[in-house]
Image (cartoon, rainbow, N blue to C red; front, side, top):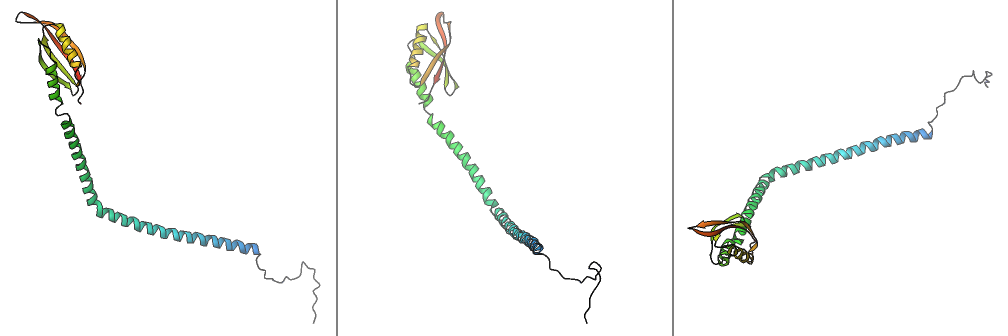
Length: 184
C-alpha cells in the first residue's frame, strides 16, 4: 500500500534524523583536548624537574654540612696566614730602616761645625727631627744648616728659633732646627 500524506509540510510529523556535527566543531574539540593534554604533560615534566632539582639541592646541602668543619678550618688558616703576613711586613719594614737612625746621627755628627754643640735631638715623626743646640754666632748656625742640607739623608732644614742666650757670662746663640729626612 501506498501512503500519501496530504498534510501541509509544516504540519507533517517530522522524522528524527541523526546528524553528525560539523567538521569545524570536531577540530575545535580536538584542539581543546590537545591543549589540555599538552598543559598536563608540561606540568608533569616541570614537576619532575622540580623534584630532581630539589634532590640536587638536598644533596648539595648535605655535602655543605659535611664540608662545614673543613671550611671553618680553611677560614681560620687564612686568617692566621694574613696575621703572619702582616707581622712579616712589619718586621721587613723595621729591618729596612734599622740602620737609618744610626746613619742619620753619624751624618749629623760629621756636619756639626766648630763652636757648635747639640743639646737635644728628638724625632717628631719618622721623617722629621728637631735639633736643639748652642753656637757662638749666627754664622755657625747658618753653617750647620747648610752642612745638613748637603747631606743625602736630609731633604730640608728649617730654622725654628734662634735667640741670644748666656752661659757663664758668655753670649751664645741658642737655636732650634727642624729637619725633614728621607731613608735611603
